[in-house]
Image (cartoon, rainbow, N blue to C red):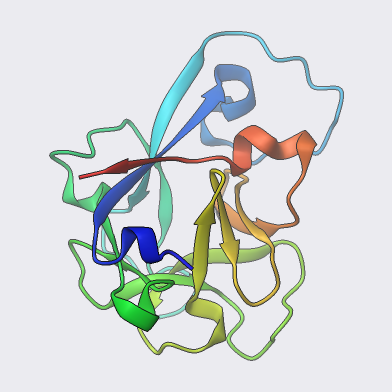
Length: 171
């Protein structure tokens, strides 16, 4: 669980190589991609446009230039007590992290990760451990893919380690 963070406000930073980030375009599945350029930090960010994502109630998460201390769209809070595995948006209370397959206890790799109104079922519980965000329902981790559906759930992978690793910044 996330008991050490109960009730805390935080942001998450991902460090990607410029060529791996590829200006936010969808990741090309190729183990032979050569990385060049500088490492760049990005913050997990709830998109500010308020447009529905995936369904009328969903909200899109993406990466943006980090300003966690001042940008409330980059701030999240861990739940309290037994709800410490539910992660809430600071700016849009009641919108929580969610695996976009509420009917499946073991959704496949590639299932979108986004924000959805709180209901507390199996697909809204996550554990932050060793830099990875694990879905409690099946152990897959949040992975930055880029493109139209920027974050998807994937098995932990050495090949995608940078796209699965977040540094927590407690506020």
